[in-house]
Image 1 (tube, protein in one colour):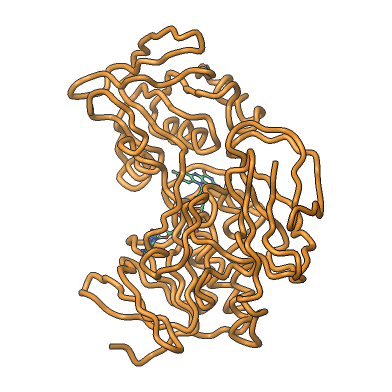
Image 2: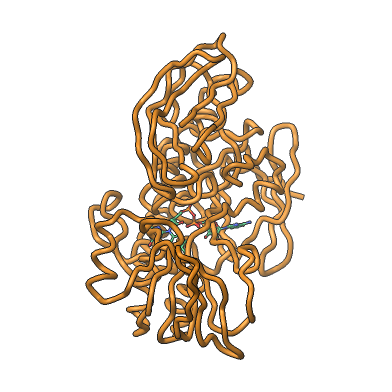
Length: 406
Ligand SMILES: Cc1cc2nc3c(=O)[nH]c(=O)nc-3n(C[C@H](O)[C@H](O)[C@H](O)COP(=O)(O)OP(=O)(O)OC[C@H]3O[C@@H](n4cnc5c(N)ncnc54)[C@H](O)[C@@H]3O)c2cc1C
């Protein structure tokens, strides 16, 4: 049982959760608790020993580790309380509060709060979920696991890995390998072009890492350790590339377990909680921010989003937000993989933009319509895993569901 009711409980102490804690305190909300399951708060950046982090937020160039430390320091200074090694494992709704069941090093406890912010981030898809066949040798990592190994445990699991994937996190994997003294032998990309913007690929090329596009991973070979990967090119030719490790990057999925425990609606398109333009989930007292909403954005983006949604939580506690029931559903169609937010209260700006991703490289007209009537249209061209944003559309209360199509 718990007698204290906090103003806001934030689940997840990464950039989104910590920046939200600071912004809530700045907005005059007093009793904030951040619940973080790891030994230290800071989120994914804590596992990234490389730059660039923090330029827009703190006007300084930090490594991920230093950035995470700065975030924690600022959140503590703001007066928020940080509970580390605490994991949210359940929840129940009371009339005026949400009661979280929390596992701590000393056993289970309960934390009650008027509002909850879910900021639990994202993770990479595991090998099993990617349905990669072959042996199960030692030396196969996703970037997150590799970074924990490298920066938290200071161990080098391989010397000549192959990197599968070419989005920004794959470049983070190269930087991690360099820190470890490992030298990737190739980057493999099934698409026609690298996923991250081309200027970023000057770096792998400069240090002599071939980027093989239109190439698929067919098999991982070796026992007990990785000895090679078998790849297939566009013509269907197969060949083996000798290596002693494999780094699987990308294919992110939101860490939505806490959202499920809280019983909020999950958007099948993102895999994270569905929100309105104030960051409000299907439960009006539960909000969400950061990469749990949209796999995957940078730390800086999540930091700003955490702050912005925190201001709506403060407004909700102080004077109330527009009625959640007034929201109209918003969905993505055609070449679009998802759109966030998934509900929109007409006439209100909120976070000020729609955020989308395409399923595959696409170009054409991005249009917003309501009941078959086109409200806006823009010509766009986008690659998958690249940010696509649009100002919040002006929609009518009468028009019904809103559809964004490309
Ligand atoms: C492997 C990898 C590498 C990346 N590299 C970069 C990079 O180099 N640069 C960059 O800008 N972005 C990078 N990103 C994107 C990264 O997700 C963002 O930088 C940023 O960390 C997202 O912030 P967040 O607060 O939304 O989530 P996170 O940073 O993931 O923080 C979420 C926190 O929630 C905690 N949590 C989850 N569930 C619970 C629970 N039930 N109870 C309590 N706590 C919980 C987690 O332990 C974690 O600390 C990377 C992402 C991944 C997966």
